[in-house]
Every structure is written in C-alpha cells, then in structure tokens.
Length: 327
Image (cartoon, rainbow, N blue to C red; front, top):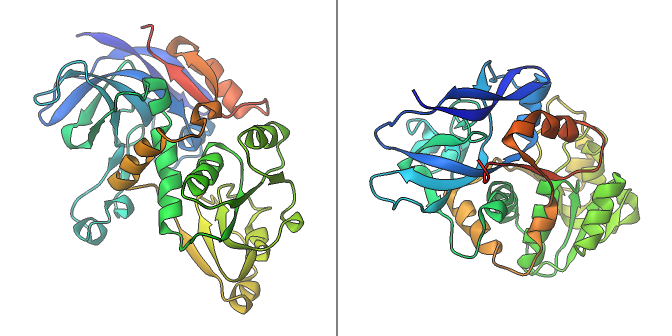
C-alpha cells in the first residue's frame, strides 16, 4: 500500500502531519495530487474540538487545488479546483435545485477524507478545471471567495446602495471585494483587529472600529458572527434595509426584534455556495483586485502543527495555506 502525508485531526488542539495510506482508485472519483490547501474557520472549529461532526482520526481540509493524476476523462496533469460539498440528492432542497442547503449537507474534510493531504479522491462531477492564468496558490482562494459571491448574489443590492461589512477576515474582505467589483462604490468595513484593519485599508476599503461612525446602510453583511456584533447589525441598517448573515453563530444571540420590526428590515442567511458561485468566483480572480494579499502565511505539510498554532493565536495572520508543491 502506498502512503502519503496528511494533516490528521487526533483530538482538540492536535492536528499533525501523519503518514497514512494513499486513497485507492474508486469508480466515479478522480485522484488529485494536492498543491495547496487553505485553513478556514471550519478547520479551526475542528482543531478546537468544537465541531459536532468531527471524529478522530480525520484528514481535514476543503479549500484545495491540485493536479489530476487518475481520471477517465480529464487529461493527466490538468490543474483543478474541487467543489467540496456533499449532497444527498434526495431531499426537497436537492430535488428543487438547491443542493447547497441539502438537509444532509456534508463537506470534504469532515464527512469524507479532506484535501489537506498529498492526495485526495474527488467525485468526477465535482471537479472544475483551473483556468490558465490562475495559479494553484491563487486558486486556493476560490472557495472562500465563492462564499462571498453567494452572499452578495442573494442580497437585494443595486447600484448606488451603501453597504457595510462586519469583519475583515478573509470572507469579509472577499465580500467587500465582490461588492466593489460589482459596481458598489460605498463599501465600508467594521473591524477592531489592528492588523486586519490595516490590510483592509491597504486594499482600498474605509474601515472603522465602531459602526456608530458610519451612516446607516442599505445592506449589512455579517461576516463576524460575534455576540458583540449581533445588535449592531440592526442599528447599522437603514429602515427597509437588509441584513445578510454570512458567518455562522455558534450559540443563540439576543436580538432587538423590536428594532427589526420598527425598521421593517429583512434578514437572510447565506449558506456556503453553488457551483455557479464557484464559476463566478473563478472569473473574479481575473479582475483588478489583489486577492493574494489575503494570503499572509504559507507552511509545508510537515509544519501543519505550527500553522494551526499560528491560526489559533492572537498573532497577525489572515489566510494561511498549507503547501504540497515541493513534496
């Protein structure tokens, strides 16, 4: 049996590079040699031991790019990105074309062996070729960018509207960038972390620490999902405005429902993305915005424990990538 290195979750705060069996060929699935895999909020929940579906041992990771090495149709050596959602295909949302809100929605890196490994098996139907001109490194941003694209697409936003984004993490920056690239000129960000504030400013966005310093907005995007933010969302929206919940709250929050009613606000949840969002995200990477500035650190797979220590610390970082290119 051939082996490979993979980032394996062994318990809370215990993710390390481990030698494991390489995936065996599987009908309808392609074998991908991974180039890069990003660390995201889901991975951090697994690392903290708080993800309800995580088990041990588990190969994590779903934000990955790679190269086809075994596939019936796609040529050997084709660089690809994987669509990492796992849908049942039987529930009402799946049958109505809304697979991203499948009642049994699964994800690579939790419900199937993930892509933070030298090799990963991916369903053939969930592989998208990486266009020429997008490097595997830059391509690792497609998944978080697709989250942003989906959030913006479901918002009832129009040219001339004012938008505010809470949180200048990778998703928040991607939401702000998607708005800007779609012609929304008045986009502000609320962020208290000094490093992230500075990065957002360098990318051209006005940033404040307190939403009270901003005019009320037509659309409010919550990419922070922090208890301190919940009621600021309502105060930050214009009467008749809209709130898009992009981040996921882990615990119930108290909301000013009277304020929600009196302002006649609409609230929408944004859950992951569709394949169309993925395709739009790919196209946005060709536009004039320095998305790669979001990537602040890169570690080899053998350094994955250090990568997670950094990601969980209060030190300055944004998107952290695990690299397999030299393996």
